[in-house]
Length: 241
Image (cartoon, rainbow, N blue to C red; front, side, top):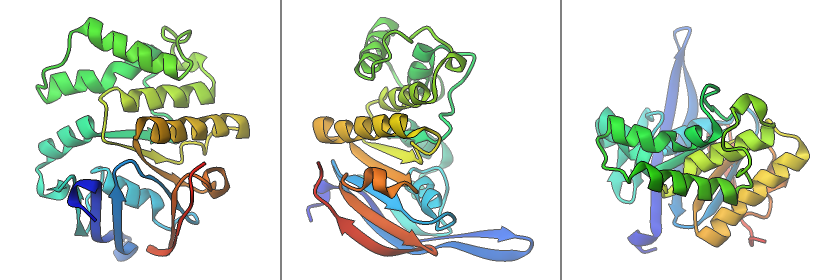
């Protein structure tokens, strides 16, 4: 495999936690290579280590041992500020419970990562009018053009998750990491979010990793990696719809 085709390379990932004086082993040696434009589903029972692995791949949580590189950069060899900047600018996150700021409008929530880039990481950003135009385009593509001035408290669960996806896209990240993105939604809204993520992958070539316990919903989206007891127990490569 050409190195340029590899987006994430995770090797020998081990993650232990201390609890009541005992060591709890959550991940016991995971190896994953993620190619650009892949759609990967990480499935498995509760407690298998799915979300822990996603957080490690996304530079949110350090492994006890092992190496994770993003485009050849060892993300855990970076200092905290460098890793936070990389996370902000190159990785988009979508969580089960949205994590929107209720005092901000839909548009303001969408723009938040770009504002953080400017204020914390001294990144030169486009004029506000240009950023607002980009955010409006993203929101319109997600059928949220009539909700831009709403507060999150006025939105349905599916609308909140679409705002979270828009926010994850504003910095044009290399990859979207989605932790149970449909877990808090009814079946109709969940299917809508699944279709949005698949469209981003197939039409925009966006690399997507989804952690889910709803494997049936994502069963035809690409590569499925099963995790059980902290190890990869099976891997299936399926043809995308």
